[in-house]
Image 1 (cartoon, rainbow, N blue to C red):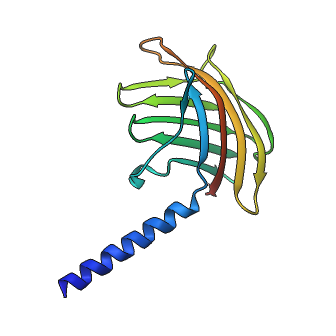
Image 2 (cartoon, rainbow, N blue to C red):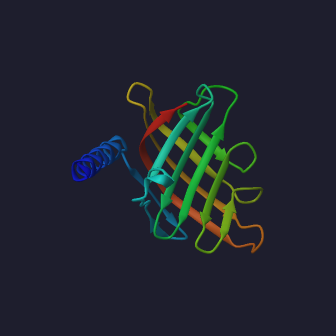
Length: 162
């Protein structure tokens, strides 16, 4: 009886895990200080490799990508008065944010005055909940004064609404 229960639990876990991975269209890449960077995550407790969210009645858009081996995260968000639409948005650290975090060395770089970037929404299909775009930004780590250059960023993701 216990063997049957274990087999059923394992089968349900495998099926649930495989269904979850099929939902995500993971096309996210950029360069970090000139080196190609792509997300990778096999542990779903940290979320997907790359994910996008349209929240607050369509006024906030958030993208995040995680690289499991290096424990690095790239994320950016725009917060608008009106609904998110196609176009260019400045990542200035004030209302629109951009971050690069490297937990392996406990450093977090943020966009701020003098270290900014741009986020472009190229397509936003509300019927299929897909979004494509480009991004680039420079960010400063306040304690060490180190700078990171995120360039040639592109994504094509399925987004979630809240």
